[in-house]
Length: 294
Image 1 (tube, rainbow, N blue to C red):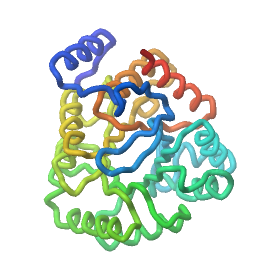
Image 2 (image 1 turned 90 degrees about the horizontal axis):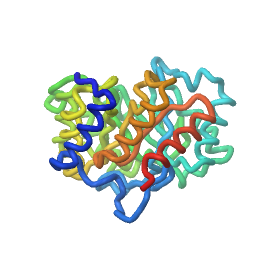
Image 3 (image 1 turned 60 degrees about the vertical axis):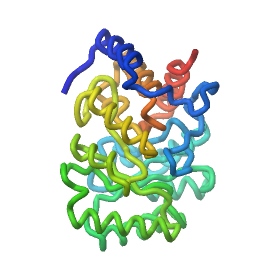
Image 4 (image 1 turned 60 degrees about the horizontal axis):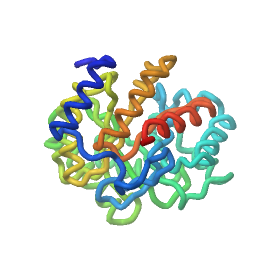
């Protein structure tokens, strides 16, 4: 994987703009200056969410994460704080154990109709996927989920595997029944990402994306080209690993470069960032504001 230093990053950004590899800026209205709170439409799904989403899975595994480890009251207040600052996109997962925290936040202050709820299922069988969708709705306390992703796909040929095909069919059945609004995936393998971009069964892709190739599936150039293909096909594109899964913490200039790169890439509709402190939310909002200023 290629690492871009500051000089490489600036050269590559200019080159892609000149060559047409990048697409127009993220603003869906060219006259609009984006902010963290700007409502974005995910591809052709019709689903809208804030440009900045609040992640809940930093170092998430086995039903917990850095956020859930804060304690119930602290994490719920953090979700409420994000929403009070204009965040309408909440990124959950069964693997993170974060469902019931958002449910509590919605009981306290967040209106269901004001937010986009995304969750992820690690299941790879149709029976388990069907059960997961029902359980997720119950745990979150909602009749429907806006986006459900197959979580952390690593198999290069996953779209050809019968268990994946059957699970996607279950997800689309749930979509037809109004239980979910969009079907998607998150990939941790470049060939898997390419398959997702080409699949007519995928509405939304959650992709690892930053200018430094940290925790990414391939080089910045290669991932950008695949995301461009997916976006042109009408898929909603969400970016993650903006701060390199915390690797850029303590490097404010590189965080700002990453934010500026992503929000001006033209291939990402919205981004998800995990926060463990309220000040981190304001800081990221400020960086997005600086990145999109004319």
